[in-house]
Image (tube, helix red, strand yellow):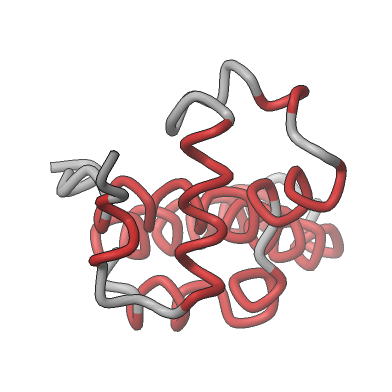
Amino acid sequence: MVDPIARLDVSDTWKDRFRAIERAGGPDLPKFRSLPPAERRGVQFNWIAFFLGPFYFLAKGLWRQTVVYVLLAIACVLIMEAVGLGRFGRAVGYGFAAVYAMRANISYYKKVVLSESPWV
């Protein structure tokens, strides 16, 4: 059987992540619990995306998601300011950092392996 992931022009780390996503049943991850804990962490969370957020998504070519997430974050902060909860604005930033970290690997998998353009 030919491994289509082996032919992709990505690093070995990404190939390992993509294979783990495939073992988990694809982007919806129906077999996620069957993966070993180390692979689950690799599929579920991306530390670079957590710390670099929109810049990382832009570098990976996921610009539509970047625009939507940034606009949602700005809207949330503005709404919190308007209702007098401005001091919780930092929590919004951490929340969106977590969203970037948890969506990065699946979104990039869809783009590279499935040739889907997320959020067309």
